Amino acid sequence: MEKSEPPFQEFYKNLFTNHEAWKENENGIFDDVEEWELPLIDLSRLHHGGWQGADCKREIAEASQKWGFFQVINHGVSSDILEKMQCEQMKVFRKTFYEKAKNHRELNFPTGSYRWGTPSATCLKQLAWSEAFHVPLTDISNMGGFTTLSTTMEQFATMVSKLAENLAEILAEQLGHKSDFFKQNCLPSTCYLRMNRYPPCPISSQVFGLMPHTDSDFLTILHQDQIGGLQLVKDGKWIAVKPNKEALIINIGDLFQAWSNDVYKSVEHRVVAHKETERFSAAYFFCPSYDTVIQSCVENSIYKRFSFREFRQQVQDDVKRLGYKIGLPRFII
Image (cartoon, rainbow, N blue to C red; front, top):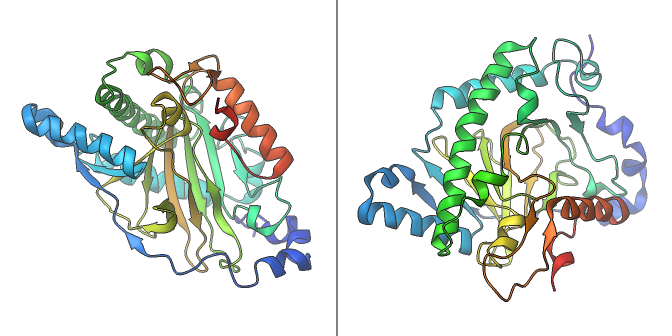
């Protein structure tokens, strides 16, 4: 019977047999990391208006400044859709590796959607022990075939798109900048969904599920299971995020940090691998078109103006050359 697991150990054999790579990681790459709860914000207060709505908006902005991450409940995405989304993606990842990698006709994902591992990895700590389907929103309706999946993805995307736009407008408003910038530039044609699976990993103390990084977008909305594994940097140290079944996790991306002139923080985060348990998550990335120019909404900007295309290109060049992303520091004036 064909296996569904990506062939990590065969494909990355050189990394595992490389003595220096093992030596570098012999004590494991994870210290004891304390588990924290992210700031929890009840978005139902926005509908009450008045001081409740104002307090809610202030909390969103405050968490974005101090944490770069927060979680929301009563967010408008039904629990039914979230459960269906997780169920459908579990079914897809159960397909054989051959079906996933060759984009079998039953799946009908856009070409190049399936990704696993890290082809550019030169050492173990650059290897991502994970697999994903990375799908632009505009391609979901063309998937056909696997209808329950495409319908569920479409419903999920519609709901989280609306949430992302609302949050972006609130964050802009809290900077005293009422703007339709996000409505005009972050369209379904420029945003995408990523379904993630982190398989059980026999060497979980040696590799990441996803290596430390910041997100190259305005906002990311994440729905995860109860396994845990997401970690982020807070006050200079790594902390583990305690899962909350009712909540969606929101994090600020690089573009919002630049647009807000460093008021809102795009924070480094990672996913740790589990030895025996698989983990699932679905992420929505709120992105502009490649031609969109990112510039600070205030004067005396820390960053030079750049297009999203320039930013992405620079990130890709750095990853190819160095094995990791540098991001915003490349664009400081």
